[in-house]
Image 1 (tube, rainbow, N blue to C red):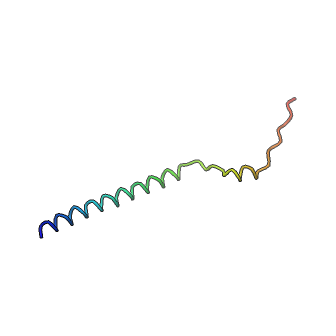
Image 2: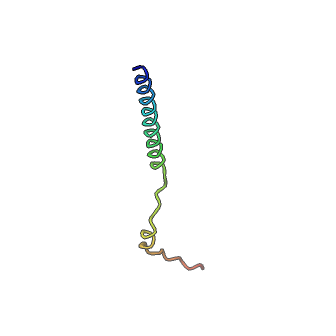
Image 3: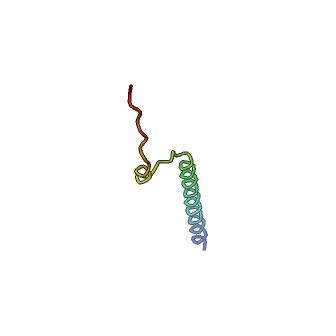
Length: 57
């Protein structure tokens, strides 16, 4: 009976630490995504017309 109690304690501690680490990783990824500079997709770049360059005088 004591072995079952020890096993359950260790298993719940392991699971709790895994869930905590997963939550922290998700939080960090969300924070990094919020700070990221948006990058245009190649098809969006191709769809935009080029700006005419003024002739150098």
